[in-house]
Structure formats: structure tokens, C-alpha cells
Length: 338
Image (spheres, rainbow, N blue to C red):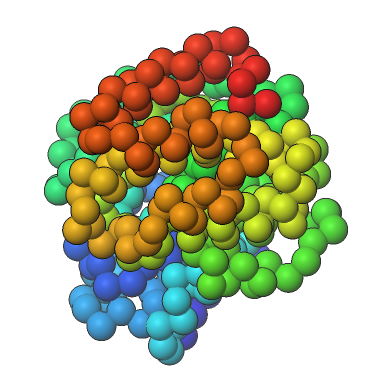
């Protein structure tokens, strides 16, 4: 059942939180977010509960009793994370939409900085830098905000910068009002890929959007609290298939996303997985899966293959070299990644 906000005026921003069975995380997020929403009429807040069997309804009710205005949707059954994320997109009325993970935090003071940027209507895609935390988020005074922003002249430059982080829902704000004017297919077609959010993100990226990144770390993300699926399957096979469909593998944007993923994200991720062989996040044969995907890309053999094959100590040394090369690549404008 969905409890609908009676206001018909379009909000500037919708913050939509898909949640399932993590009432403690949701409570922490809402505790930090609620003061930032006090008196703020430009924001629509949605919580979409995927039929959680825990205390999620009670948590939402307690915040509503305290005066927090939010739309609460509770699915009749667990429809899966992908479908719940798509449902958040469909419910959102905001000109901009920020689908936000229930285990992440919008740090104190962050919302006003985000709204200040969105109020200019200059950007279609806005990436938010993040920082990690473990356990309980330690609430302190609001962080100092530098107000620095990096604006990108071309979508492919933004794709080089963000790359695999397009999949991080809490780090991306998109202008739904711009998507509505673009040719689009059924956004539900990516349900089951664990990357359903890319359907509207990539649709917008295909439409020559204005892109920017807020340089302050305004999102805090809980470390090691996601997964349960094959890393190589989702971020390798599924990601490549989606990039192929939306952009093609040899276009500037397609190359930007996949090359950066191969040479920057996968080496670090695979080394972490090797160091935790019993990790629930990786139940695959990464050497076989990734070779089948990337064998024709020299970046696989230079950046990723040694991390997969060398003894752990040497793989760690190689990763440090990879990081150094990637830093130089970024400073020079990504000549290697292109």
C-alpha cells in the first residue's frame, strides 16, 4: 500500500530509499536525514519497503509520528531489489531523483549543498563523492564543505571519471525531467541483472547531458554490506552486455566505462576477493569469466591478469603499480583508458 503525498506541485528532488529487512540501517539514515529535511518543501521523501519481515514499518511510523513527511510504500511481497529500485524510479515525482541505499548516509549538511546545485538546473547527471564507514556511523559536527564542483565538457569525460560507479545508486543524482524528453525503452527490462538503475542512467547519458561531480564526500557508505551475487557475472558479463546495448563496445562512452572498469576497479576488487577466499561475494571462476570477456583488450593482460595469477604478495605489489599508473592516467586526461 502506498501512502501518497497530497501535494501536486513537482518537487525539485525526490529521495527514494528502497529497503529490505534492514530496519537498523534505515533508522540510522533517517535519524541523520530528518534534521536536514526540516522545513524543506523542495524534497519528496519515499521509502519503498520490499515486504520486510522485521521492524521496518514501526521505524517508518515512528518518524512519521515525529513529523517527518514521507511517502511509505510497502510491497505486498518481496519483488527483488531490482524491481524495488525501478518502483522507486516510477513513484518519484521530483525533477531530480536520488535513489539512496538504506545502508548509506547523507552526511549532515550535505542535502543543502545538493539542493543548492540542483536549484540552478544546470546539470542532468550529478555524481556525489563518498567515504566508507564500518559498523555504526559516528555522527559528529557537519563536515566542512568546500563547495567544489567538477564540470565535464563531454559525456564521455564524465563516463571516464565515474565508470563502474554508475552502479552505485547512492552516488548518482539524475534529472528525471530530462529523461522524460528522451526516447526510452521499458526500464524494467534490466530487472534480474542487479543493475536495473543503469536503464535510466544510460538513457540519459546517451542524450548528451550536462554532467558534474561534487568534490566533497557528502555520502557515507557502509563497507562490506552488499553483495550476495557473482561479482564477475554482474559487473563483468551483465555490465558489458548493458554497455553494448546502450552505447556499443567501441564507442567513446562504451570504451570509457569498460576500460576504466578493467584497469582500475577489477584489479582492486579481485585482489580483495583473493584475500578473503570464503567471501560470500565471489563464488565464481574469475580467471575464466574475465578472460572470456576481456581477452581481446590489452588492459586485461596488463592491469588485471597479473592480479589474478601472481602469488598474493606479488599481486599486491602489482596492484600498487596499477594504482600509480591509473593516477597518472587520470592526471593526463585518461589517454590509456580511452
